[in-house]
Image (cartoon, rainbow, N blue to C red; front, side, top):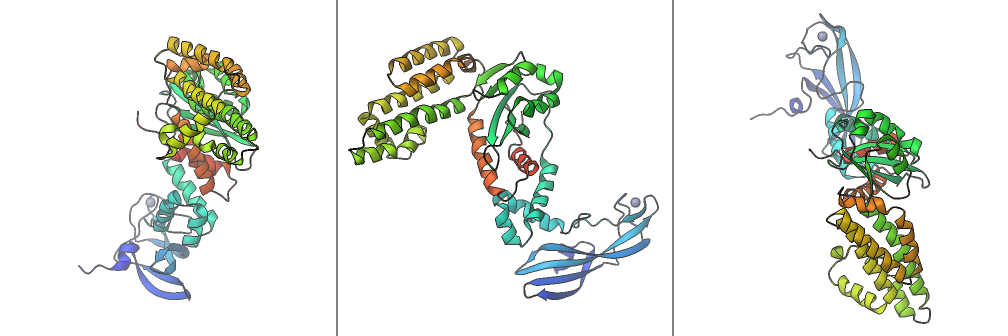
Length: 401
Ligand SMILES: [Zn+2]
């Protein structure tokens, strides 16, 4: 087959000339094929009545080693039903300075690479890349359905420049991100409940969240029937920071005259905080040696494992017994940080025990936390919350029910 390259690229046009603009840039001038009458953008009917023609210069995807600009004569037509209308060109979106082929290429790159890298690969301005990505997401992100929501998860995360936060609400059943907004006060995420509406609020059965946030008060106001559940991921992370880290630092400090053991303990943070089943081979031996040599570290490590068991209790009664035992052991441990943590947890214990009856897979929250960090890195260079939030929604489109 004797394929005509240009007709594969630019339907309805042929190349009239090609010149080198610079040593790595081509300017390709196109001309409309006379064999194909143009189509009206409004009604898609073809017509031979041409009102006028104007030249548009647009960026095309690279051709071998060449950057490519196109000069495209675009016709305005006198359509019998629409009046004066621009012609429809499949590969050239209206009012854009690049072709559909180029934007599809950028769309696939920007899913994989930071915008900065896509900019240097394509030679396009980061602003152009961001706009292409933004339009892709507006097209793809679907509006969540209010009436099917039963179980929610709420979380907060830090925005680009520390100290400022945003709130995210997730459907626990499909893992779709439903809503993202700036701030973490009650007023900041009230718009979510407004969007959900009275009927939607009344259908909510449970909401998982971190302790010590403004979420629970607002949930109790709008969804008084819903059970607030404190999720394992946040509680265990807090235990790591407030108990394990504290004890580790204290123990290291007591070993000033023994630099070798001190170094082992100081460097054990990762070993202690990681899930044991995720430790690489050989590290489990290091962990057991460390725990054997240090009683307080061993105690808090065992208590961390026991703490997690509260969430895996088969029913609320069992969860409640496990809690009583855990609390008793923490008070008898003689470890100050552990006792304090247990005291604090006491105020939230209802929401922990309830998780035995309202099982929510909060590992999603952990995954989301990590993904948000990645998105932040990829979109580095922007301080545009609209774009950032839309990226989060696009990353969590939700699974089918
Ligand atoms: Zn028309």
